[in-house]
Image 1 (cartoon, rainbow, N blue to C red):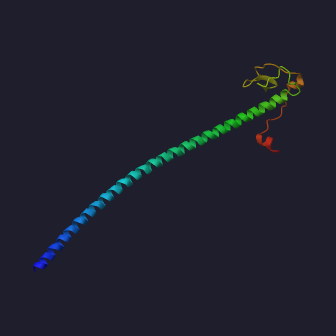
Image 2 (image 1 turned 135 degrees about the vertical axis):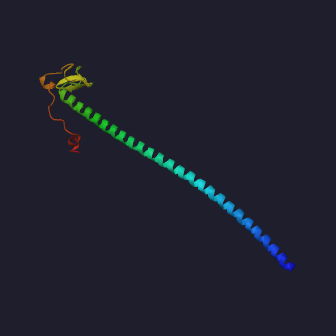
Image 3 (image 1 turned 90 degrees about the vertical axis):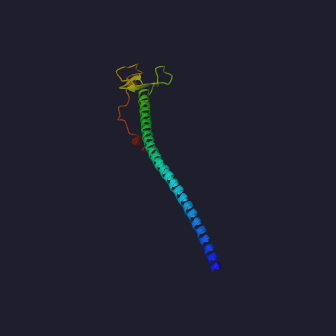
Length: 151
């Protein structure tokens, strides 16, 4: 019977050691689980911040895209204005020699008169040449599509 009691005592000690190991493993698992939950919370917060930053970046991109489109439209308008100014000057100065001191490409032609760029015809500066030189062609202003159509 002593042998059985000894065996029972050894088994009981083994069970206690096993219980302690299981408790330690459970505590370690709970600690690991808590650590993972904390990391998950941090990752969720970072994900939310990234979503906000993405929304801000998309808004900026949209605003910049709109600004680029406005700039493009503005530049096309400026180009078109300069093109038609050149056409008016060419019609006005047709037949005028290049050496003529009155030839001034820094002036625009409005209603057959030379005016500083950006002014109206009510403030004429000078006239060049004879009557046929002063008369620019009174054709309607063609669109860019009409101009580029032959090409």
